Image (cartoon, rainbow, N blue to C red):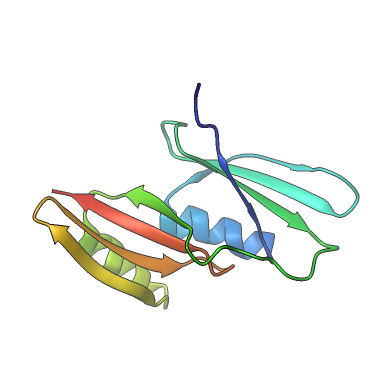
Length: 122
């Protein structure tokens, strides 16, 4: 069995796609209409192993996300990712946190309020 993707219902597809491209570093794999008022965009890492499905249903006003859910992405340099976050006028939600000498991470919120974790394994 393989894990395929995580689905996120979004408030603004354009804003969310830009976040996952520019901040997280995923690439758009495919986009399509899934009905008269629904658009779907799949983004994935270059290796195709990590995928996110964004769904924009224009009939849905609110998006409900669990406050205890986060998506984690490994980065080569936590310092470089933090610099990118600051250059894009985003706020660090929490961290950096280093629970042991081998790992360090921090969280930001995506445009829908979902916690995104950036992790550097040392």
